[in-house]
View 1 (cartoon, rainbow, N blue to C red):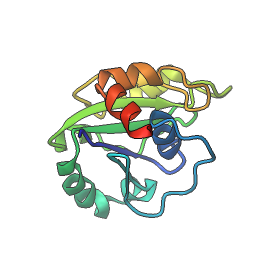
View 2: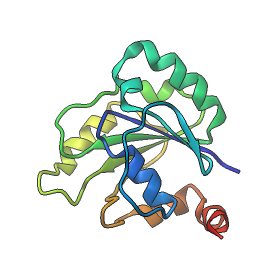
View 3: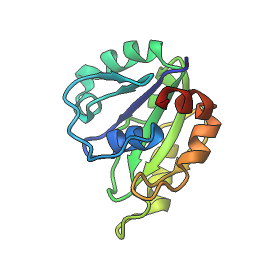
View 4: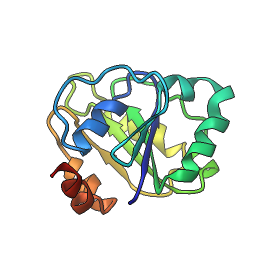
Length: 151
């Protein structure tokens, strides 16, 4: 099975995204440590905000097929260093979250993610409404695998 790894800043919407991808209802809770669930690696935002943890992210990414770089569209800064996606051995995808929020600035979020140099496309999604989640799953070719896990 393909594994995905999700990285980004604190409160970027990583866990909510993971829950929506897997069709899990409920309220996201704070991720305290690396969490392995449903062929997904959910990472705490503190790992991205502390350069001492970059090595842990890079070594964990060895288990993943995709690394999702999550950028919150309601903030005007990024936690990712320029070119950071190129340090990962697997495919990287840009994810812009919270596009349904009134303070969302999609263009700024796109510019911030461009600096990261992801190797794949960028998807603008809403974990709240589900907008563009299906397209993301289809791109990663996960739809059938995830649906099978639910039964």
